[in-house]
Length: 455
Ligand code: HEM
Image (cartoon, rainbow, N blue to C red; front, side, top):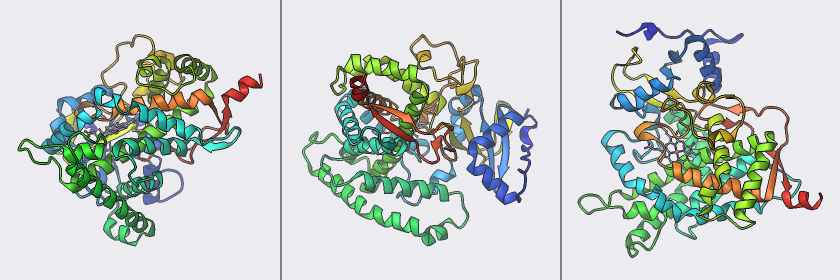
């Protein structure tokens, strides 16, 4: 029997301001909105903003209902389907059998054995990035870490020496992000045509597409197994009938989507890790001691990954307190119920892990940054009480890739630098589409070797 929540939560207008302005302010401060809803209504809340109806789910058990028990009742959602930069669905935006097929074909690229082949590139890229910094200078750790993750992805997704640089990739990601943000607006086709920034970014995508298409063609003409990059892997993947699994446009779209999925998430996670380490010197020193003992001054290699136990715990703890994808979206395909509460077809269902990651029942002293909680045996907790990489059959396909590249990046930076957050104040957040810094993360770079020398 559906429970009363079939009534919509009432969002009281914020002080001063009209309805539309209020609602837009709420959309912009998404985490503030979620906090208000959870405080006022509990584990599952239906609400409406402008023309859209939402149902937000905070409780891990109810999240399990959505992603495991009733997964056929939910799709990825209309916002993803409104993308006009790509030619069609991808592993990220597709649904049903189409999504399953894409995932089955793509997954082997991210298997542990395959990842072993990328370890060296990941570690090398991190070393190259850290050598760009100068002692005592202020850098924006957020931009630096995003650029590092882009450069790792570019080196692994594309053929060696391909003419795509971080700047081009950054523009492409900016275009996809903008397209995604505009997806909510009525009249978006007109807006896109009128917006100079959108038009400029779209023009810049052309040359990159041409380079990637040429690479796809070259991969198909090359001897089997001669290339190990993602573009070649997708270009040469076969279907059941022995033909190519993907068209040229599909390979192009998948590669671009993969750049998008890998870059902001991993980059922001790394910046957050350096933020927490700067605020928690004991944890930072412990990680530095581990990195120094395991690496003995050389770049990390594959076998070091398992030995960097505390560094991996720093990553887990960062993802608990600052999961970049702190909520994920679905759309109900039919009328259904979650935890007995009626949810109408078409409602946008948001699954939010922010509060369960900070729930003292699952994580004692939840507001403290304590990497050591991950080095001890884990207490019993609901399956999705911790889900920085999503949940169910759509969980992050790049999780192992992300973990490996992040651990090598943390180790490479900590080996040489201490990054001190410049401001004493908590950083301003942008929580609309993820848990991100609004204005970057200025840090001062201290060369660790100088500090030892200087006593
Ligand atoms: C710290 C880094 C990362 C985090 C926190 C993260 C988080 C997530 C989350 C929460 C989802 C689920 C989205 C949903 O259900 O709607 C997801 C999906 C996905 N991620 Fe990641 N991700 C990270 C890095 C990566 C990397 C490095 C790659 C690729 C190299 C990647 C590729 C993908 C793809 C393709 C999907 C869609 C999977 C599907 O729908 O089947 N991610 N990620």
